Amino acid sequence: LDTNSSAAMYTPVALAEIRGSRMPKRALVTGGSGGIGAAICKKLAADGLQVIIHTHRNPEKAQALADSIIAAGGDAAVLAFDVTDAQATAAALRDELEAGPIQVLVNNAGIHDDAVFPALSARQWQGVIDVSLNGFFHVTQAVLMPMIRTRWGRIINITSVAALTGNRGQVNYSAAKGALHAATRSLALEVASRGITVNAVAPGIIATEMSANAFPIDAIAQMVPMKRAGRPEEVADLVGFLASEQAAYISGQIISINGAMA
Ligand code: NDP
Image 1 (cartoon, rainbow, N blue to C red):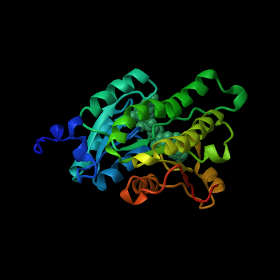
Image 2: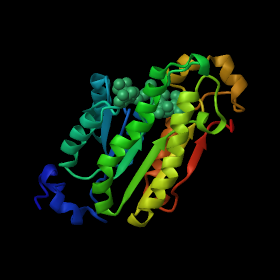
Image 3: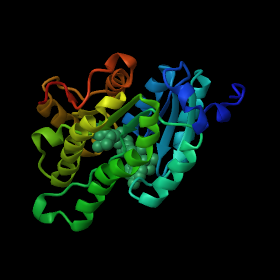
Image 4: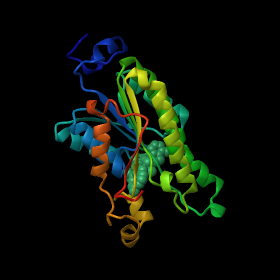
């Protein structure tokens, strides 16, 4: 094992050394270029993880985030692929995993495309399911076996209060996120004996570009008992805890962060 070379440190033959070692763990945050994703990337980097910032269409934005994390003394790199494309996802992650296992996976990439149900097109239905649910499948399947071999892992799926309460105009979105809740519980059972936890974090209204388009300020005051949107950093702190050693006995849970909405 050549400890002077970061690439050599993470070759597959070095997995035994990674288990239980103090080497920095690697984290992949899908949609890391977005509002909540960027806050999660910063938090995990501040906690000492090597962060892979995933993006689909915004490599410059993701690289600017990586640069700011590195300038603050953290470790970050950018990886771009479309989570709805099974082959592209598998190829990108195959290359990435050659450098070593990913032990923290945050499935955060998501879109909404709202319409009341009679007006909801097949394209809108499929598009939202493709990113949130099929994206979870494509990414998690690629990452899971190397993670299992290390006997330590954290999988955190970012879902939504809409999956718990429902939301008018979001049948597609709440169906995708609700399916992720069910997948979270089942996968948690499958990997519990391997030192891997699987949880979902279900945010309410969080102040990002996505929610700014969907919820005007007066609507937020009516919908949220705390009368404000959450901050991406508040979600990131919860994710950071779930990714930590201290959260080892929390698995299969749907954890809400929503200002008492539900
Ligand atoms: P943003 O729109 O800011 O970010 C969404 C991210 O998803 C972007 O980084 C985007 O990548 C990525 N993404 C979209 N489509 C694809 C794709 N096909 N392949 C790969 N990546 C893709 O959203 P938020 O930060 O607000 O939301 C993050 C998560 O939190 C989502 O899952 C959302 O559903 C959930 N959530 C958000 C809430 C809110 O109020 N903001 C409330 C509840 C849940 P890129 O732009 O780089 O192409």
